Image (cartoon, rainbow, N blue to C red; front, side, top):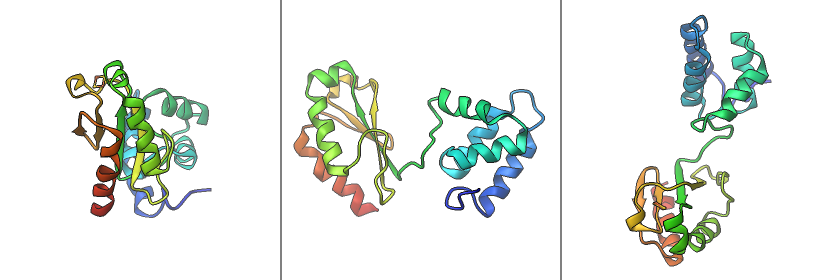
Length: 162
Ligand code: FES
């Protein structure tokens, strides 16, 4: 059964076009799955089944690729991805406390998305700005030298932007 919130109407048509484009190419499953994620926002079970049925690749193969590559996500992501660095420099400068504040402000655990679809919370490896530790990124925008007290205001700012 197809989940229309993720794969319905024009999305299915777009995905069909991507499948038709790559189906018979060697190694074509990967670009199909990338397109599917771009179109649907994630590779949940319904999307995986759809790809499997349309391409003839076993569901286990599709699932294996979806879980192997870190660029794929099995659940819909929020509008804002909040990635807290859990690298060593950030950790020793209090990153864990900042992360706790993030979980409190968003009310979700790492890897989860808020019910309103705004935030997906992630624990990341070093994001390459250790001089700003502890640091996090929101959709690629870096926030550094964070304290737990900074977090509610930052989250609120994005909530207001909606
Ligand atoms: S360890 Fe956090 S940015 Fe490098």
